[in-house]
Image 1 (spheres, rainbow, N blue to C red):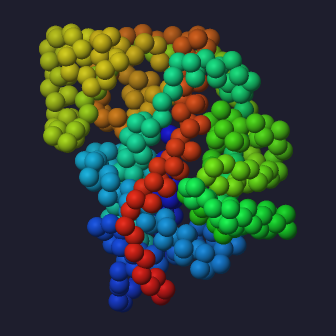
Image 2: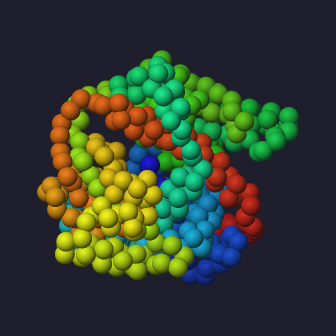
Image 3: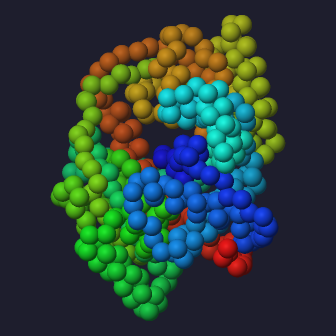
Length: 428
């Protein structure tokens, strides 16, 4: 699933962003048991202003921008608090790997990236490191919650594969901009009318030629509002159900809507479109063992437990027997750890990288993904046409991606509605 974008964007922009100096700080927002300081709001606003300037997009009105930033920080704090209570931790190994990947994206080594940040006025490696750690925690929390909330049945998969959208799933990808005006649960006629008026104002602003990113930041309630409403590249099947059909008929640059759902009113813009995937795939026959951290088993203890299991396998114990006894992946554990034939891109990135690089019959080192700690071994490799199982897996991923945004938005609304939030004077 997609990464939570804002903090990584700040990490990449950090060398150019100047720190906000606040002589006298104050508590601006109380969120359950945590606090948001005025300096945090001012710093985030400054970061957003810088991002808009880099995109050469006009800013929304100052009061609207401040309100959007405050809501963004409230949601971040709520998720971080929940992640802490759920025992989600990011160890130094995982954090260093994430920062190394960011450094590579900037064409730099980790050491050079750190030195550049520390040498830039108003920036520090420690600050960026903390930002990325927060993002990783939020990502892990979201993945856990969505896995619990989203259920895809075999019948769902078959229906999807027979549908026109399913048949076209490998053909095209779309990049959408999205504006949503949310409606409260059990909205009154007055609230519906107000929401409809607001989406019409956004539509009129677009028709008048205003920049989509500015309109999204001004009017949208979506989490992506301050990123210009950009949903990134997705296949048609991974788009929210509401958009899947109209987007196939849209031209690049076209705006469609407004569309109405129980949750609100929507506008979409087709920013880009590109072609599909090749039908021949590389596949690996894989076995794995998964150990998850729990409330009574820390992440480091889970890692050590798996390291001990690996040591026993290297001494001659059966990989399959150890998987049956110890693995926390019940589906594959019953099969001696076997995942069958797996295509590139089907697994989470950390798993996929090891699977594609390790020699056959060699037990991998212990590595971590969002699911926990793994070891794996590849027992075979082949290239072949897309199989029924591969198509089913792709369909399952597409259906999960389609439901993800809707379910995430619903969960975030529930989280916000159930929280105690006191917004004090947030003006400078």
